[in-house]
Image (cartoon, rainbow, N blue to C red; front, side, top):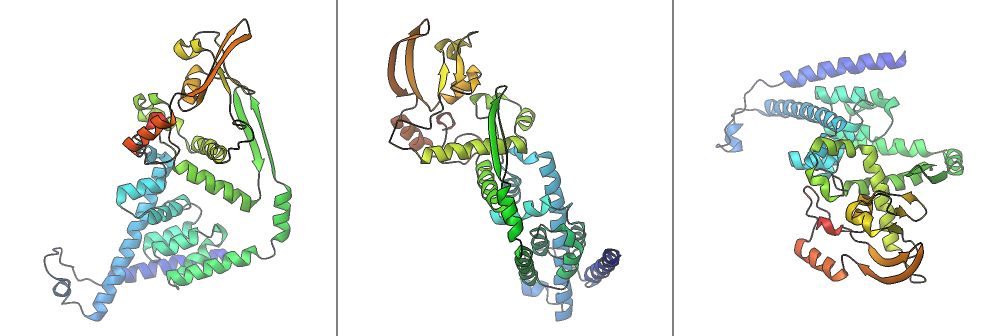
Length: 366
């Protein structure tokens, strides 16, 4: 009952304030920028100029609401991947010229439009600003959507932001028992099954936030197409089928693991964190049937996967007969350190379309 009354009050207030702002000034702004600002608005008295600022501000808010709606639909369709962007925010920044932080804010609001209908309606009506809508969306508390939308109409964006910060602090008080229980419920299981690796787990919110942040940043640095050299020949619609949000998160997890291993090498034993691939030369050359091609401890893989993995990997030649090793060669690199330095000096960044990565690059991408 209480929520219904608030809904009605919010709707009435939105309608009244929108009508007031839209009808406040009837003067037409000269379209030509050839004249100085002072001359263009010479006929405006202070009251008319104030009303015009309010009217245009409402139009800007309504325009941003439209932009956020379009961004939400573009994200639903994953259109940004079609342009080789790595996220909705990056695509918005490139397409509209927004600063990265501003585009991230638009992506945040777009992601939560359906959760905050009252805030969405207020932004569309121009009775609250985009900054106020962003502050409300950042609360992650859709149950207070109507109250916050009404409050936003009576406060500035700065005041609303302080209210939001205070709300977060209050919500956190007395949550110690819940936090301890969440910590006790943590677990992680992983295993190989039917040529796949499955991973299941649960973390406390604060630990999950660390993992999510790492995965999100890794995801944003991943390429928008397959990491194989054949990706350039694959139509965009096929790449979209590969690069769903879930698949990007999986790729990001692998990227984070690879980065950790690269930064924590030890000298106590040679490459203790190696992933060892056994592959017959015939499998690499011509996909010979029956040729050995497998990851040590994880099972068989496709020859094309082995070829991709050996791009920057160390190779050890082994001659064997009837299962017996006759000769083991020296460790070598297809892409030596000197060759990699030459590639990096020449290209400095990834040469794959739409990718601006400068670190941890595969040799075939520079």
